[in-house]
Length: 277
Image 1: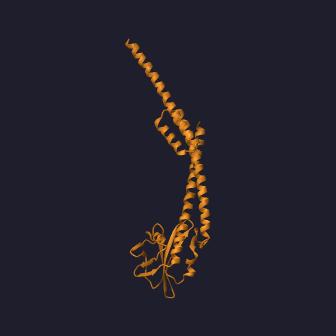
Image 2 (image 1 turned 45 degrees about the vertical axis):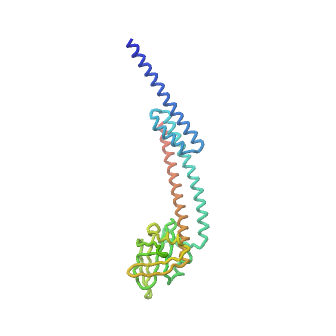
Image 3 (image 1 turned 60 degrees about the horizontal axis):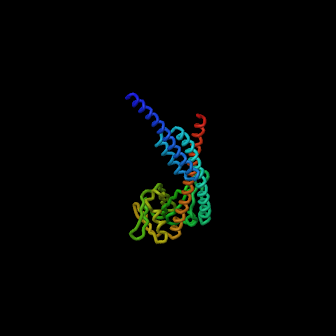
């Protein structure tokens, strides 16, 4: 009697195990179908979530997992194609915006012998128009990196710090990336460059207060204070806006290239998978 009961228990356990195995495959198949439906509807993130869950929840559903890997590659390829199309559209829009901006008083300078990257400036701030002026001059390179140069003419003050202020509110930078000093006919010219992102907010202060009267203080061994010209404020604001567009284009182009690299990676994996099968 005990032998019969024991044998029955073995048979039941075998049947139960078989039914569980079938249940796992069926459940994995349902997840796979859900992923496929999401993929067909263009909901790539939901499709990937389903496929990731399938791998975690059903490690022994081998057939479903093989199909899931194939589907995941299809999802990733489709997603990157969509991303590339979106990046192309955004780049085209920003390029049109850039072309319009460049028609509004910017000049471009590049010495092909010595410069790999050229710079945009505003015509009113051209050096030849400001031979004897003390002022803040802006420029933006082709990659969208903005620099403001503090140009001082007069007796030496050896300035390495610039403060821009309105009343008690101010921004101040003592973090120049370059300093130059020259002398001609008894007049000293000092040039101190500040790059956006390392300028401790002086460019942003000027842009945010472009409709106000801004005081500039040059600080070094001695100090010199002057009122910023309206045309210089306008120029720096325009150059900042140009830099935003240029940097956005560069970022979009980099993202597009990354999407293309990801596509090539997925394609290579698919080729290796096909060869191994």
